[in-house]
Image 1 (tube, one colour):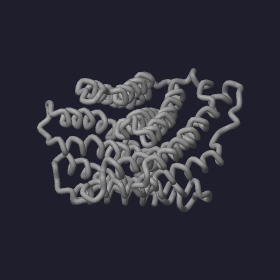
Image 2 (cartoon, helix red, strand yellow):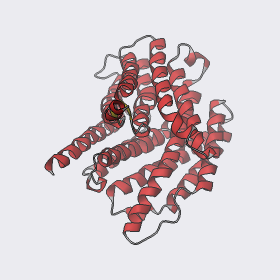
Image 3 (tube, rainbow, N blue to C red):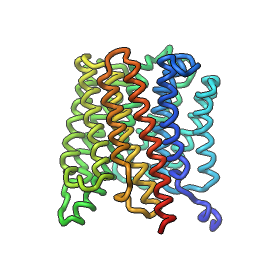
Image 4 (cartoon, rainbow, N blue to C red):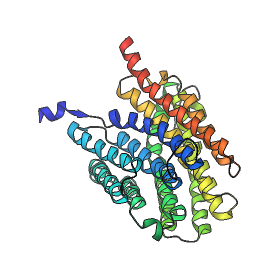
Length: 374
């Protein structure tokens, strides 16, 4: 038992740098492949890398690093090897069954580590719903690569949008626990008081509404109906953010960046809902507000803050984080406003994203240098 305590480690030590490297390299690689430039990979493989690896490679690595606060080294090693095997299987064009098996093993191990936190200790249904969210993301990760799934399920119209909405719901939940706690502490130190924090009733409505939207999308229901439900979720998300009064934290770059990320959630849900209801915006385009804007800004800020806090450094001292968040936001805006067939715009957006996560690696190193200087 004593040996196990000595060998326990946070999953973020492996998964956060791995996620940053993955994001910095895979997105521009997939974009050049989709454009047929500087990459020998087939178009179909490039598209799979672009969509699937963003959700089931990058995002799942961040989830593992954030949720698994402490585990035994050998268990973390097995989890990390399973994640690497999935990424290698995709890159090496392995058989789809191998990719599905690797992703399935990683998801099973991830659920093994995280489900007890929400299923056992959690008493409220809102907290236990995270188990279903994680299970849904894991199921999507396996289905996406199973042979023949693309022929039975319209990837562009059902599976990927459903997975994106599941990730959006997870960000809504996690952000709703982390952001108001950080805001309340900072506002209190300035002599103020933040009354609206978790907002349990609003959170319950958000989980229920997003759950309905996810089920409608997964079932292939009428797009206008699911779009209306997503629009309701967008309004609720925006109201929740406004009640946190993010402008009171504008003097803290790291906290204000969290607010920008949560704002992208509201904007992303709004654009996705409008695309489903009106058809004036392509759904694949609107979803970039969630996958690039929200996922990018929130994960980069959360990883930077978590990395510094675990090393007992003040996240207020992080340098360069606003530049990272602005770069990702610019990439999202470019992707949302691209005219059809704009290869140059896609490349610029991919490079901005890549540079942002290369900058995040520098932020990780920065924490170590600050410690060494003390």
